[in-house]
Length: 359
Ligand code: M6R
Image 1 (cartoon, rainbow, N blue to C red):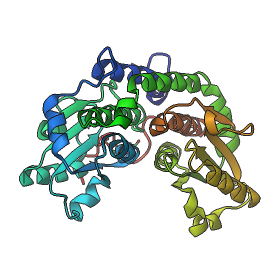
Image 2: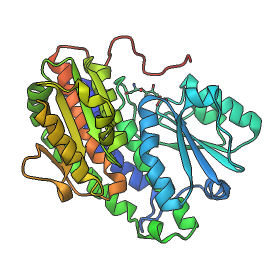
Image 3: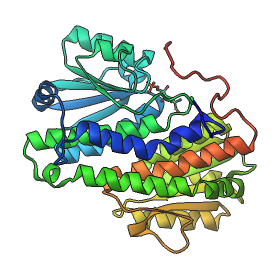
């Protein structure tokens, strides 16, 4: 039930710190070591390439996780929209392993690929929030997100759960391969930092109401920009905003501004910059200058380690591989309040269904 919340979406945003802690309790032992089924790890260990397939927000969670599998487990990873992968299947590696991300476990786009994967005889894993769902029944292995029912059409806690659980899986695989980067990655501590950092943002949720009014109040378009680890988050942030507030929003890689998009910037265009990745923070700051010079109304969301005094939103410091878990929360809240302030039904945006069971 919604309890004191006007909409499920706000309730589900607020549950995210609990979901992070629950995942740590479920999938880590008392020493903080991952507890993942040995058969699943053995199958993954044999793979020479991981294919992550999903749609919408789950696809965005896959984009974030690519770096984790490659950095913590040295497993080359390709992330694709399940639909397009099905229509135009790439030349596969010798030993592929398929990971299907799906909150509902019912997405038709993903299912059409899983049917083929089974015919080809390759191993697969479904990460889902719904036990017994179609994709979980049909895949070789299942890992549950344990996020609790997600009722709002806009996915929030399932996205962060997918990222956190993939981090645990990547760490587990890296450990079985005895990789130092994985051994040094203290996932239990990091998920604790993430949960606390999320809570700080949630406690300030009224500030995001104000920021939404100031930056997105009456606009019909908006941009999210980010580079490196912040790029996939900008895609998810834009999807959240368009899905429930009907603002035409675009997320893109900062470097791409000069390759076309900057022509759209005019006086008052909202641009929200996500700046957590130290390797490229100064480049994103240059983008901020460029769009400001053309009249954009810029809001910056930065991680403490790279923050400046002028940043409106400052995120707690966490391992860069997990920064998406924090930077997405302001975007979720901005989308929520923009929709609420425009008088829309936040939980049931027009034309959309929670589970998309037709291609
Ligand atoms: O249940 P799934 O994760 O497979 O759903 C995929 C998309 O339909 C879903 O993430 C959709 O994009 C959300 N409504 C976005 O908030």
